[in-house]
Length: 325
Image 1 (tube, rainbow, N blue to C red):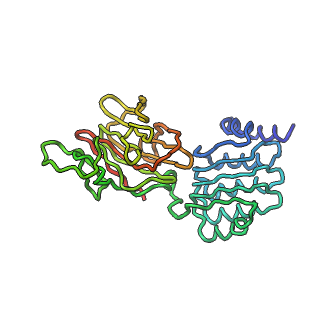
Image 2 (cartoon, rainbow, N blue to C red):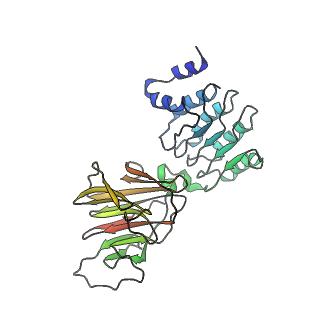
Image 3 (tube, helix red, strand yellow):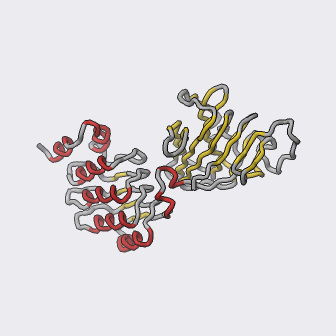
């Protein structure tokens, strides 16, 4: 029996998905796949065999933590490992995990030259552990966007603080609660003059620009249209806008002036989560919170303009930006 066959037979029936992913590909993408400790043990075993064609492994956005990294390092430091690039961005790794990775990379057997540890929490100890390798031109090590907030579970590690912009609000929209809440104002209430530069449709944009990786949630009541748009755009109305909407007509995702029905979406009020990954060119919408949310739709795009969080409302609707940080 070959070493590869032995490796494959070590998997249980429930690991067939992982088996299909890693065996035929030299660059499997396991980012945001809820990779668990059992999977990591199998991966570590697989990395030891030169017949497994792994060269570039992306495990980003899985909460592996230091314990998971240590399991992975058992395979990284083996003679048979052929891995050249490892992406562990947003995996809740601290200085302890960085020390294990530094040891694995420093071994004579390692062929790894590219390591992405962005959006983790290496701290000073982790940076020190990797400093010697970082200064070596043979290695490309990314420690950008680190900090203690990256230790939060799921997308909350990317949570951003947002407020609605009064100067970008339609005249029928009233801001409150420190500009975190926006409510449709009925006509019977005293009219107020529209702010200079206010939105032509019943929408409001956030003051802050969204960059890198960002996650935010809003408590919304129907009818609503919530998502992202460029500074001068309308939700769902152009190539620079992505949103999810709910009304009496049904539930839809919108982009580029087109809409697609989302039949599984059946709530009139509740929470919507929005995750933006500018480097990866993706924006995802979730029903519910980051802990228990259901994916509605993911759009792939090249973001050519800065983006704002935005919401469009109708009578009796409102939207409150949730405090996640």
